[in-house]
Image (tube, rainbow, N blue to C red; front, top):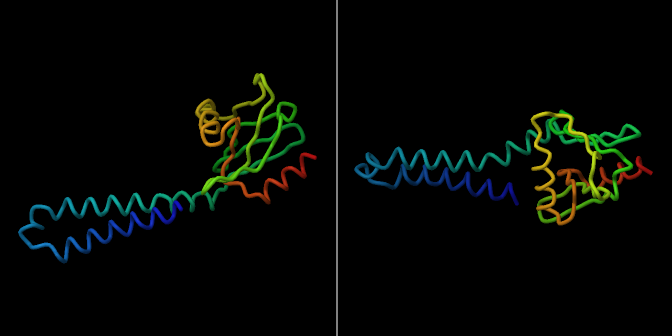
Length: 157
């Protein structure tokens, strides 16, 4: 869905440049040519953002590492946080429309159950985003397939 939206935006930008440059009279283009061109380039660049995100994710995918005591979530090759196993209530595979991944519910009350490993990482915003995307889910780790979830669950058992 995201790629289709990007294709439509990029295609409309290219169409705007092509049609604006070929069908508009010269007097109109002398005044509005540069704004048409810039708006077309803007649509093309916005349309290419989903492709860039997917290409970056393909080069350095998200990872979950299990070391026997905790799960460590890596994003773009950097460890962001670790969740200690005794603090996990349940783990499940979640999927909705174009969003999929692993959901982690923590035991209540949430204390020192998660250790943030990157000082610049806003963990409270990550939790708020997780709860917004999937109601009640404390931590949503995006872009993990169901197969990856099954492998993780087998390691935990």
